[in-house]
Length: 76
Image 1 (cartoon, rainbow, N blue to C red):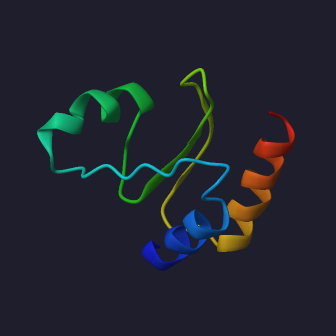
Image 2: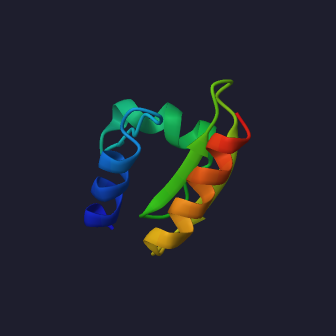
């Protein structure tokens, strides 16, 4: 998934902040609990109010992310 996320990060770099959390780092336990992290990989779209708007677990095609990110941006 890393190449897909890196591509999306490049495409949307001026519109969306991409945040990567190391699931093995205990400093991230609060974020994992807050967002309901369940499985690797686990992806979230979080709005400016820190609310999860959409999430996916496991492999996600780039087209799915692109459609979701475009929809998210059009509703902001």
